[in-house]
Image 1 (cartoon, helix red, strand yellow):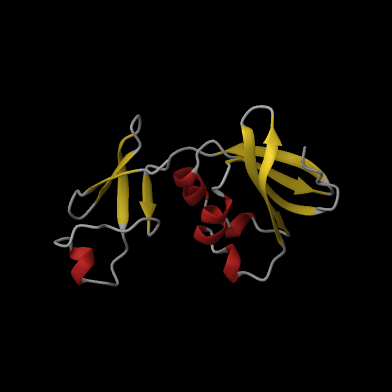
Image 2 (cartoon, rainbow, N blue to C red):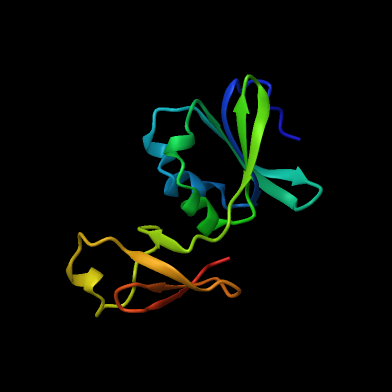
Length: 144
C-alpha cells in the first residue's frame, strides 16, 4: 500500500499496468514541468500482482490530460489528495478521440505532407481498442 502521508496536495495515479508508468510520465509531459514526481515501479498488488504508481505533488489537475491516461491504460485509478487525504477517486476510459498521442503511419496521409497538422484519431472499435485516423482512416490497434 502506498503511503501518501507526505503528499499534502496532489494526484496519485494508481493501478498502472507494470512497466507503463514511464509512458504516462513522458506522454503527460511531466518531464517538462517543474514539479515533484515519484514513480514506483513493480509495486506489489493483490489485484494485479505487480503495478506501477505515479505520485504528483501540487495542484496539478488542470495539467493532466485524462485522454492520454485513458489511451495508455484505461484501468488506472486517479486519487486526488488534499490535506494528506484522498478526497476524490476518478477512473478513466478509452477516449473517443485522441490528438497527438499516436502518429499516423500512412505515407499518403495529409499529416505526412502537412507536418503541422495535429494527428487526430477516433475510436472505431472499442472492444478491440482500434483507432482510425480522421484524415485517411488508417487503422491503429492499441498496443497492450
